[in-house]
Image (cartoon, rainbow, N blue to C red; front, side, top):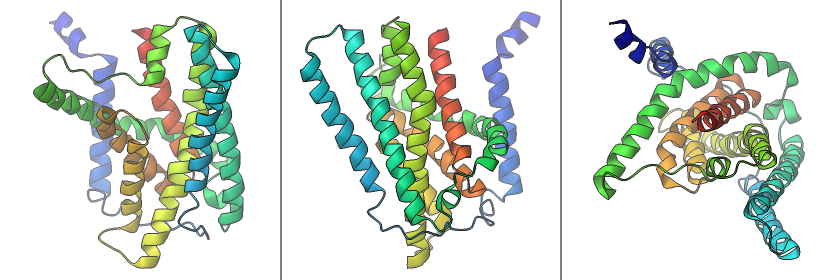
Length: 284
């Protein structure tokens, strides 16, 4: 009996149980989400609709060109060194793009960076809130992964498995620690800042501002903006098999931004999610 209990009482099962309780409590307290964002005010800004595409263009085109140019200049390199160089360029390009977004936010938001959601006084509160928010959607993420695998096997056969993210694949393929450390820095520190500032700070704000001005109230404009930014966020990742889970994660991140008015909260949630995923892969 004790052995049977030990098989079921695992850290993952306890986390799922805690997540179900937290998510159920949130549903009851907010009338199934209807009043969850009742006190969420729009962020005042003067962004044109095309502005979020400027850093996206800088990011995609700049990094792609730099990878091609550096590859030709340095010639043939061992595989892990080539991947290290690509990730280094990726990280540097992300930092440049973050700088561009900070400049655009200062010029476009009524309260500058504080209006954008970068108020350093919020860091302690957002840091403590992030684990609970991620925990509350963890069961939904697992269900999305299980359903994706289930339907994938129905369509493509029992051998179907969701492919690992490219960066996780590199960590498991190469044992060199310089490459692993760089990937961890990019995934846990740089990418969450870049993606949250872009998809939540700029895209989600732009969409909500447009919907508020156009009065297109199919339902709450804040939730509409969260849904649209989550779709864009998911589709920005190459592997379509990851999209269902990324949609749920994106909705959690978007809700955290609208509810708190702070970008630090979704940044911490995103970083925690990436960190847990990397730790799980390294542990295995």
